[in-house]
Length: 189
Image 1: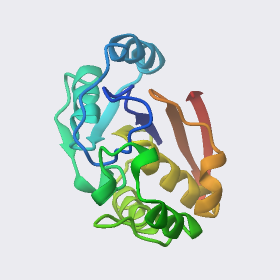
Image 2: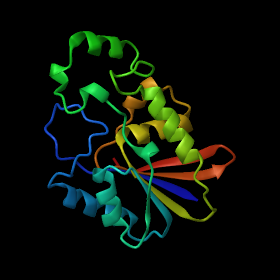
Image 3: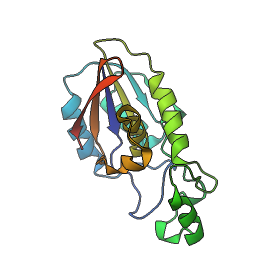
């Protein structure tokens, strides 16, 4: 069985803006990026497709998998940046940013969540997917969701997860080998 993690394409937002659970639409480049993903998965059959309910993921999922009923789940949403959502990173109060930066894995964003909370909800959801052998499953989601799941599989400390390169439209194939062993292949970064 294989699980394909697909990151949404470029969102329609200015550079330097903090966003997480804000329901952003897709940029014009999304069509070209979507077509690149479609080429990678074109010959695959998928048993189920899961998606974040945020439109930057759901639109991509519906476009890539028009023949599937897309199962959305809030646990696949990006990190909640609370009071910082849609604020320029440069305008976030320095004291708040300094406090969060001391340990962004455990510290909460004001009125938001911590990275460990994101990790816990992602691991809870994805590990609960009932997968059959010899079947493919797709999860269309966000950067933080992918980093969380890869950190879990690789037993990587969360603060090291940002060393992984995961661009917009990334496609990662995770194949279950045996017991708790997995093969991870970056098909598109």
